[in-house]
Amino acid sequence: MLTIGRRPLPVVGRARMYVCGITPYDTTHLGHARTFVWADVAARVLRHAGVPVEVCRNVTDVDDVLTSAARRAGSPYDSFAAVQQFYFDRDMAALHVHPVTYEPRAHTYVPQVVALARALLELGHAYERDGAVYFRGSGVRERAGLGAGEAARLLAEFGDDPDDPRRDDPADVAIWRPSARGEPGWPSEWGDGRPGWHAECAAMALTTYGPALDLHAGGSDLRFPHHAYEAAMAEAVTGVRPFARAWLHVGVVRVDGAKMAKSAGNLVFTADLLRHHPVGAVRLLLLDHPWAADWDYRPGGLEEAAARLERLHAAAGRPAASATGERAAVRALLDDLDAATALAIAEEEGGQAARTVIAVLALG
Image 1 (cartoon, rainbow, N blue to C red):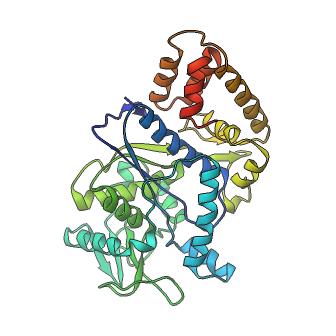
Image 2 (image 1 turned 90 degrees about the vertical axis):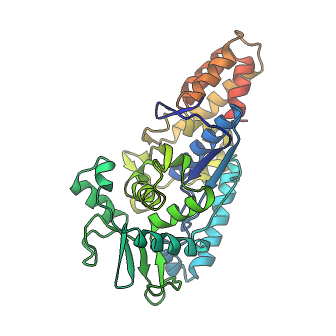
Image 3 (image 1 turned 180 degrees about the horizontal axis):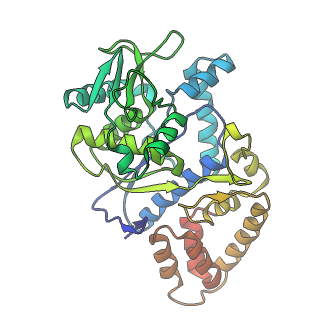
C-alpha cells in the first residue's frame, strides 16, 4: 500500500488523481517539471502495485496573467494559450511523463463554474455583489494553519485582493468576477464575467471525479490559497470531507536560494536541459531529493545525475546481489515515494532491483 505524507492511502478499485496543471503563458521550467515528474512517479508506483490510476491534469487557460501575456504578444488569449500548451505537451512527452487520462481546459468548464457559484449561493456559502460572486472564506486560513497576516500576504500575491471593498471579509475570494472590455468574458445571471482561479479547479475536479479525490498533486507554493480554497469550495458544495484523501505538495526548485520564477528572472528551461542531457538524467536530478522538500538547482548536478544513471544501467546488467533487493526497492517507493532509498538499493543490489527501479521511475 502506498503512503503519502506518512499516511496510508488504501485504494479500492481505481485511484483518482488530480494534478494542478500549468497556466500556459510561458515555457516549461524546471520548477514545473519537478511537480509533474513527481506526480507521474506517484501514478507509476500505484500502477506497479496493481492499482488502476486515472490522472486528471487541468490547464488554467482563463487567468489574468495569461491574458496580460497574450496582450503583450499581440495575440488572442485562447490562441496564445494553445501555442504554449503545445510546447508544454512536447516537454512532458520528452520527459517521459505518462499521458494523462483527462486534460480539462478552464475555458470549456465555465458553465460548470457558473453552476458551482449558483449552488454555493443557494447553500449560503457565497454572496453576489456588483456582478461578482464571492465565496465565504472564513475558517479557510485557520484550517491551513496560517495567521491572518501571512494569509493576507499570500492572497494578495496570488491575485485575491483582501482590500477589495466589495468583500464582506478579507478572507473571501471570487468565484466569479465581472469582465471589463478586452478581458475574456462569458454570460451569467450576474452579468458577463469570468471564473476565479480556485473555482476553476474545483469545478474541473468535481466534474471529472465527483465529490472526492484519492490524491491531489501540485506545487507546495499552491498549498495556500489555491488548494485550500479549491478544497473548501468543493467540500462546501458537496458536504463530503475530505475533498482529497492525500496531497502531494511538491517542493519548489530554487536558484541561489530564490524560488525559480519568471518574476525572479532565474528560470532554467526544461527543453534546454533535454537538448544536452539524457532524459533519464534530468528525471534522476529531479527525483533524487524528497518530493516535499524545496531544492536548490545547480548545473553540476546534471553531470552527477548522468554519471549515476550510467551506474544504474550497469547495475541492471549484473547478477542480483540478493533475492530480496527488488522487494526492498519497491517497498521504499511505496513508503512515501522514497526514490532516494530505492535508487540506493538499486545501485547496491543490481539485477532485477535496478531494472525495476529504472522502469518505475522511467529512467530508461
